[in-house]
Length: 347
Image (cartoon, rainbow, N blue to C red):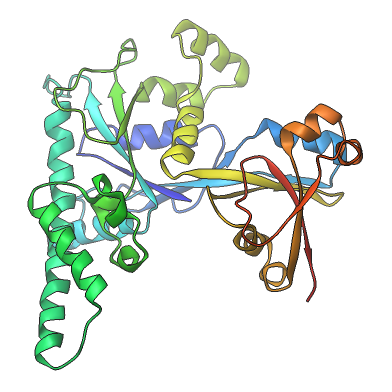
């Protein structure tokens, strides 16, 4: 699960990246402003702590999220800079769009909606170019006697219509998530969360005249949260209280990252490890088994499972089973958040 951080220059993207990754990020590529920066974040989950207390495993493995900060447009020469930027963003599952809501370095006032729309329009234009090129190729194939997929042709033409109207594809779920369009990695089809980067003292969500459809907005006081992320837990607690921050930017963004990507977690447990497995909501048991190991998916027999809440209420797997709360499910069962699963398989 990878989310890209985007925004106009001076919006505070590097500050937000530092705020999100400073406390518990495992840094990957990290260099100058012209480099791609990636950090892998541990998604702490209290349920793992509880399960660990029961099973006493050798290790606990939490889910991870990657946050990517692409190189700033303009930090290398010519169109290559924009190409690198957008190509990096295409690899992401969702986007965090940072907009400036503080006075600029030369006293410029924030223009959130205008800033947001500028980058949004660039993504729509990029997608339109990709879609139109595919339409041209389909027409050329027709002239050469090839028979293209009618469904793909219809989908691409629908994309062109929406994009020409200046609408992002994320507003059309049947297009944004269609399997036949996945390979196009449309930018405007990606789920998005808007981070309003406020001043230290400003807790309020700014008013938008035209709030983007289907996109959540949250306030992040980037500079303040960056400083807090570098503090000891004791120091951080004092500042969080002083600035009325009930939950860190990182924890809020993680929750919303899961939400916009429709992710849940199931668990596998044992004496070796207790582990969280993030998957898309609605994933059938057979596919969930493949997340653990391809051999398990290949030899899948049944999924033996109990919900976390039932296990917690009864204190152990044995007691939950006595209460008739452990059940067997087949391949098509849709895994739920908090399911604790033992996959039965034979290879």
